[in-house]
Image 1: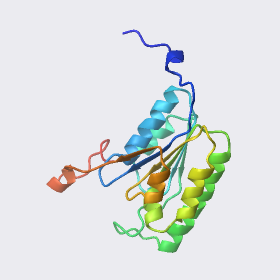
Image 2: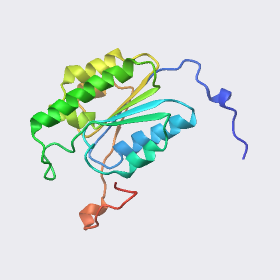
Image 3: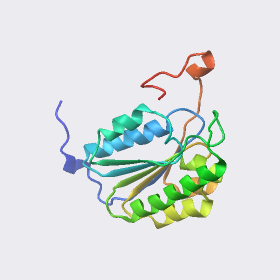
Image 4: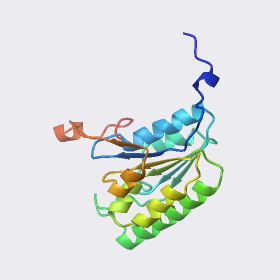
Length: 188
């Protein structure tokens, strides 16, 4: 099958999008990682900052590392605050999230990246680890051609309002609810 030359696919007026991936269904981080893979195919530069998952193994982390140097990954979290026996106090989670916000500001304005993924930032906002004005400032002050992707459950209505594209993942059925343990390569 013959491929369409890339110049036919170029947009006349590029726009840096704000994309929100939210909802209680599976696939928010996976979708963002898929965007990173797609972007690497276009020789774009991607920065991913994970706000919550930094202390747990996930296959996407190892996979994304293989996309270097086009993808830069920062694991800033200490796991999910307040669930699954997470041993870290709230203040430590908040301090890490505040460092992640500062890092996001730096990376967003660096001029080095085409896409910035803020994985689980919606959860961090819901848990008051970051503040709404901080997240809105990232959206409002982003450079015009940089794409910003915000993932996590319970996206704030003001974040949704400022986004260009919002996808809500809705769980219809999940293997875990049938007593099936999380599966390597699918769930983590």
